[in-house]
Image (spheres, rainbow, N blue to C red):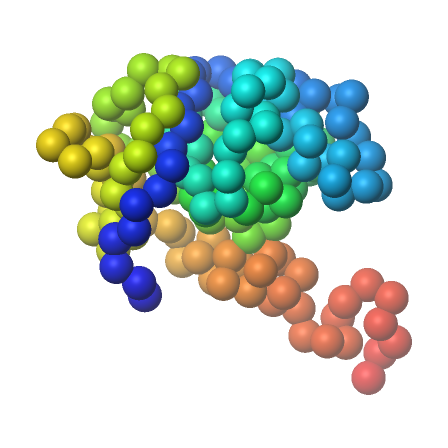
Length: 170
C-alpha cells in the first residue's frame, strides 16, 4: 500500500440526491456523455473541473433518491479516488460496493462546510484526510467484503470465468 498523498477534495452537504450527482439528462450509452454529467446538478464548475484522483466528501445520506446504477458508475468514469460520507443512501451504497468504487464512512463531523474545495493529504492506512495545519477527517475501514469487491474491480470480478453472464458452462 502506498503512503499519504496530496489530493484535491470537493465537499458536498447532506442529502445530495442522485439527480444532483448525475442528472437524468446525462443518461447515455456513451461514456463521454456520462462523464459530462458528473456533479452537474451540484455545480457546473465542479462538473467540469473535478480531476481524476479527487476525493469527494459529503455529509449524511449521500445518493438519496433513485436507485440508478449510473450515478455510482460516474464516480469511476471520472476517476474519483475515494468517496467519503457521514452516511450513504442504502441503494447508492450498494451500487458503490457492487461496482468496486472505493468509499468509506466518515467518523464524526466533516470539518469543512459544503462547497469547500481544498488540497488535503489522504492517508489511507491512518484512515484520515487532513489539510496541513487544519482539522482531520477520520473515516472507518472498509468492510472486508467491500474491500474484496473493490480489489476485484467490482462484483463481476469475483466470479469464476464460467460464471459470467453469457459464458457457456464448463
